[in-house]
Amino acid sequence: MAPPPRVCVVGGGGFVASWLVKLLLSRGFAVHATVRDPSDPKNAFLTELDGASENLRLFRADVLDLGTLTAAFAGCEGVFHPATPVPGDKMVDPEKELVDPTVKGTKNVLEACSATNVQKLIVVSSVAASCFDPNWPEGKLKDESCWTDKQLCKETQDWYSLAKTEAEEMALDYGKKNGLHVVTFCPGLVVGPLLQHVSVNTSSKVLLYIIKGGPDTLSNKFWPLIDVRDLADAMLLAYEKAETSGRYICSLDQMDIKDLVALMKSIFPNYNYAEKMVDVDYKVYTTSNKLKNLGWQPRKLEETLTDSVEYFVKVWTSSGCRQGTLPASLFLPCEHRGMNGIWGSYDQNITE
Image 1 (spheres, rainbow, N blue to C red):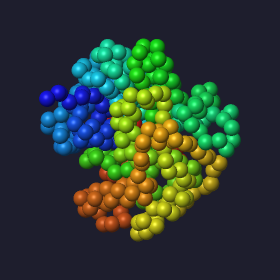
Image 2: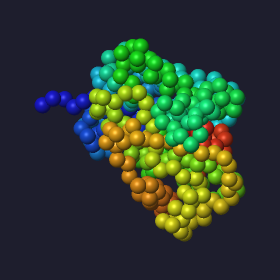
Image 3: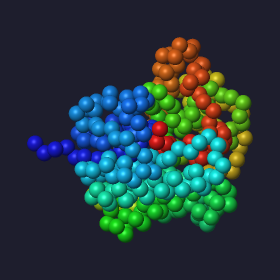
Image 4: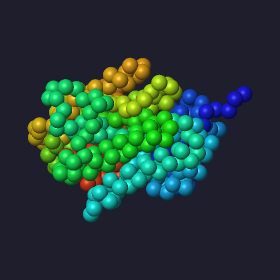
């Protein structure tokens, strides 16, 4: 019998990455997953996934350490890179603390792929790298040809969008020049249930805050949303299809916060929802037709929201909280830009 195909997932303990690891194992892949510390209890859930005992191996690695990545990629034909370095709560120099590490981390992944003869690399960027172009025709859906204006990011101090844009541009350019098959994904705000038992990823704090309510006034922004499981499906689909190339916007449901709250209330009416909002002129209309043409079939938003809230309820119950309340360990202060931030605070691709 032929050995299973072998791939590596960078930052395997993250929100997106863990669902990808689960999917790959279910499809019979042998998976290398990098984590900062394989012995850390918060990574134990990975070893409990179906098929993990036979086909999962955890590697101690850091995207800022090329040597550790090279060791993890050895023997792999493909690599998935959904991880982004996580800065501290307060950044003194955002370019050095966020932009440079993000770009350097991606550069290390690229060079490690070349050093170990990896055939295909899937990189998760962000819709933040494909939607802030002041010259884009008004009313036209933003597709893969739209790139965020880096100078605009610097002027507005949107360091997250700058980091994602620079890293994605570099990855695609490197692939063309060095014969590495690179495909990038630009997902919207990634939501859905978590596999982690210990930590709640920052993008999930959006839904948690909406359910719980609080003192902040939310900006009623128009957000493109995507289920974490649909993103994992899309990444594997792109990996397995030889004809995939370039970048893919991965976002389906697009709605503002008011409509999202209204939809959640219609499904789960018994929670204390966030009510304080202010309308802002902030709309990001995107199309995922390129991805759909590959055969991608995402689920309905109602299913995503139901599964997410049911996950939170399960955590509440296990924490001894009555319905409608949240354990303090679940809801932590959000970093960088508060609840009104979108791309800077809610990075769905965080390593841990």
